[in-house]
Each structure stands twice: as C-alpha cells, then as structure tokens.
Image 1 (cartoon, helix red, strand yellow):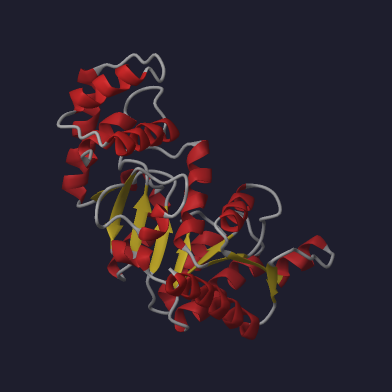
Image 2 (tube, helix red, strand yellow):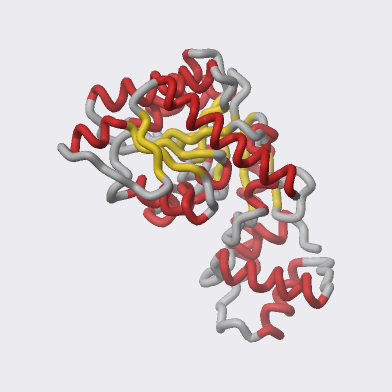
Length: 297
C-alpha cells in the first residue's frame, strides 16, 4: 500500500500529524489506492484538500536520508503499519503508531505475558525497592516486564527484571540515539539480555512533552496488565492508567499508594496489591483475560 520510507516522509511534512496521516491511509484502503512514489502521496494529499501545507520536498528527503542512515548504522529496525512484523497488540488500538523503531527482540511485544510496571520519577526509597522487587518476582513467574525507561519506578522495574535474568521491554519517549547519557548502561543491559527498546520517534529525535503521553499508550497496549507503584492518581502515570482502562487491560495499585495518601483507596476494576500472592494472582488473571480473548477470536 505504502512503503515504510514514504510513511516516514509523510511524518516529516510540517503540519501533518499522526491522526491526519491515519485518515489518509484509511481513505487509501477504502479506495484501494496504491502509491508507487512519494510524489504520488503528495498528489493524493493535494487532491484530498485536507489542509494547506507548505511542503519542501528537498528538506524532507534530506531529513529522511538522515533517519535511514542512522537506522542502518545503529542496526535499528524500522517497522511500518503494513509490515508482517508489526506488533498485533498495537494493531488493535485506535491510535496506532504508523512507524516503530526497535532495537532488540521485537517479538517480545507479541508475547502474552507482558506486565507493565510504572510510576513516578521521584519515588520514595520504599517505592523504588517495591518496583524492583515486584519486577523480579514477576520475572520469576515468566513475565516480561514493560516500562518507560524513565528514572525512578521505571528504572527500578527494568533493573529488577534484569536482576532475575529476565527480558524487559523499554518504551522510550525519544529516539534511540537521544537517550540520556546516564541511561546508556541500562540500554545496553536490556539489549544484551535479549530485551527490546522501542520508540515511535526516529533515532535522532528528542523527547517532547507530548511524546511521554504517546509512550504511555504503547506501554498499556503492549501489556496484559499495568501495575502502578507510586503516582498514578495525577500526573504522567495517570495517562498509562487511562489508556489501560481504554484498552480493557487490568490495572493494579500497590498498597504503598494507600499508605502515602493516608487513606484507604477504593477503585472500580483496580486491584490493590499488598502481597506476593496478590501480585501473582493479578498476573494470572491479567494473562488469562488476554488468553480468553484470543480463544474467543
């Protein structure tokens, strides 16, 4: 239908966002339009009269060439919406990523035992330790840990999984070549242990405010269940909870949140985990829920 290279070029058009591109692709599918070149794509956009766009083809081609070259040099995989390797879990959500950039084992995203552990970047010492311990315990239960590669709870979850010699998925809010210097060691450990680092931003892209929210929707989509260590009631982690509910994924809070707020919290369809037994039960119920869906289909 459209090549990965041309999808990337479309994303480089100033003023053309992911949702608008998705509408264009839907139109192409309905009309069974096949494009043989990027020029065909530009003509289609012009014919559709979606919006007035100033398109500089030379600049787009230069930027696209930088992306292609950086991916080739760093061995970063490019996976487009129409690729056979495109993760099935992402294909089920409405706001699908058009292009994914991945380092490591992409197949982990298709596993049925992925549990996300998320939380604030500024946890208490107890929260940091709980995140690490829960990740370690879930890894021993044959889970793959999904998190957002941020400092605090995310970092602890990745390290806890690695401590148990597990494989972890990091969904990052920037390009692979633009991660913070202090996170490079964790990046290398994840890859060396057979994990996966994935982003929908090109390798040289910087993290933007919106990309943290976008990342959280992919964390929720890639997981069978989401556990919030600290935070989650407000702020960035709340987006992961919102997306998990939207995608009908199980959500749990730790008892640590209850203790920090000084009250007993009750949530509809959200478990409170205060023991290893409840942690394992949450994992079993989350993975069984996804398995039941697959069997129904």
